[in-house]
Image (cartoon, rainbow over all chains, first blue to last red; front, top):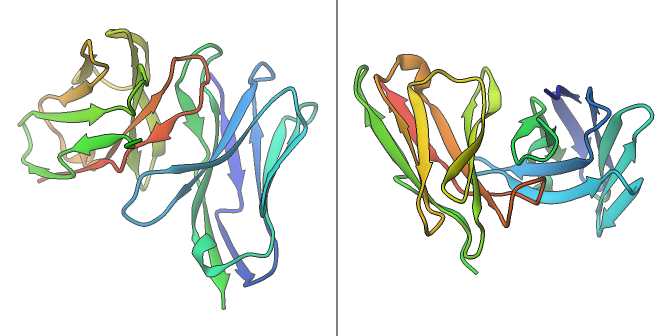
Length: 113
Length: 113
């Protein structure tokens, strides 16, 4: 099955600066990579996902990049705001053709005012 | 459209008891996956159901089981509860399996005393 590693575990940035979270995966056959945001007391919320046929995807202040050769993908948040403070998880399919996801350990993003 | 709903939201049980958790997917979604979230192990895949059939199962003991009904609603059961089963249990739904986007519910917080 797939193995996903996520870095850093904690990231503190000044409001208005950019934040980057990186993940690596082990199975070269993986072709779907979602990112989730989890706030205290809530379930994970999908914020963006990317499939292996594209190298980058953007949605307003959020972007994800994928490097299939190096087997890593990254989340980029620009112009960070206080409401961006949360725990972010990257994920990849455990097996091809199934819904089960394996998650990174999470990054606690702290936006300093 | 209503999101994924889970009941109950909070539960306290004692060791040796059993517990049943319920999940109602987003209307029209037919695939339901269950995950366990703990501070130590993070988010871990339990099992996935589609068309009332378990398609995949994670690395959990047989005390963890589930089922899906014809209306796509799902339940999971944990028998002979152990202290280590204390966790947030999350349900996620998608239209169909095979790496479709998954949407999570708020979770059921289980405390085993």
